[in-house]
Image 1: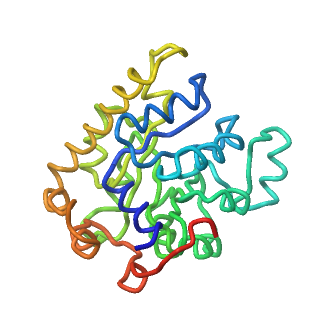
Image 2 (image 1 turned 135 degrees about the vertical axis):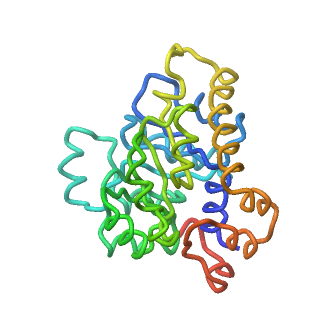
Length: 266
């Protein structure tokens, strides 16, 4: 089984993705708290000023933790220009060489970029219309990322006439109170930054407190999905084919791809 599929399944079953944004919390503490809370995967965004340091550190110290890198831009020229003000920015090639498990973006990616990377890495570009979501997924994106907390676009992407095509990840304003609404609208995954997860917490918050806060988000997401997709909940222990058959949306895996042995460092 490929690391790509294992990462995809781990994130999907986890349901909620903790997102490292630009805040005052200690990065290493937050990684430890995620692991303590039971997370198998996290998203570390390039908005965080230590991203260029922490991404290699996470790979070296937590090799079994699946790692998505967020706030990515698939154009080297744009990254070079923006790096003058945000030196932590990295190109997709640079990030890929660090052995990460995937990319998330607040903008759409070109079809060429999606096709180039989606065979080995999870790719989650943003969509701003139903057409955007369909064509990003058609090109090979594993999820289309939609911005919350409003869920009208999620519902349009997942309406009956859309035939369960688009897998959706929603971020933005995903509090425990709003997560069930996003899941009910059709989101397969949700994510939130620590500026929201630890809102009201002090900068010297410890691992145990942070892990408890993360746990609330994980439990809320799993409970909401369990109510809406009981068959998927029951399939959590199934083999790859059985689990994929239970997904309430399309996916890019076939029998040949599931047999691929991928060099994760390649």
